[in-house]
Image 1: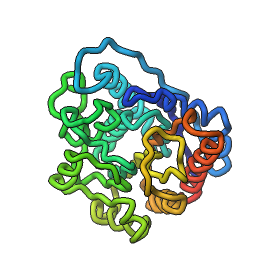
Image 2 (image 1 turned 90 degrees about the vertical axis):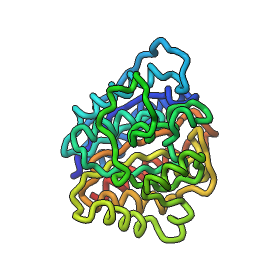
Image 3 (image 1 turned 180 degrees about the horizontal axis):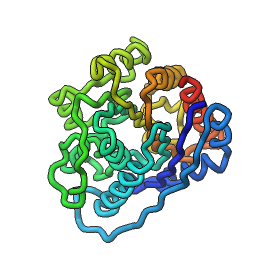
Image 4 (image 1 turned 90 degrees about the horizontal axis):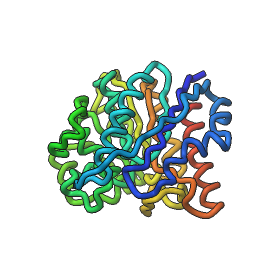
Length: 294
């Protein structure tokens, strides 16, 4: 039976919806850990806590808070990395600077599969909102410029370690970086035309021909179609469906190298009771089916 560590990261400073900070507590409270224990041995590491810092004018909203929190996440994740699957339950996608940095500090060869409706690689000066959840990949790829609060960021990601799946709402600077850095990228339209299994298998084979590198999945639920996962703050049409998610989890688990997952941007306070029920079922099905595939 697969062993799983559940780490709650109630981080919401990367965007404006505080409800994402309640996701881990909410999912734990409705019995998701008990459901996962039917297919895996789950160790609950509890939820982290964060402190609001004094802020200065910046192109990044809550820059000091975000930087301090992500460094804390990095340190915590690095300590939790093991042969067990680490499930990092957010929180918004800004936390992934910390989680991936912590993972890379222990296993620098890790391949990152970033599943999202957005690119999340805007340099701060190009961000249309100043929200950090649109910037973490810019910092991980060393494309964010100099920011003293983030001087701790040392373990970074090479473009050839990154696979983007599902982006369909990209800003101009993100499109430029994907093109110039030659990042592996497949839109939802490509996934639906060619199949998730085929595209993901080929992408992993290209980036890691020997099949030796650990894999981290950074999964933003807004990658899904609003009809599949409506309880999130940044809905974008033409997203992934339940079949795509099943194939995503199955293909990654079957490699035997999936070591960690970010589950982010689920907001239990968004949508009707029917929307929430549908989203919860989507989250549970994805995680259960993934764990069953190991």
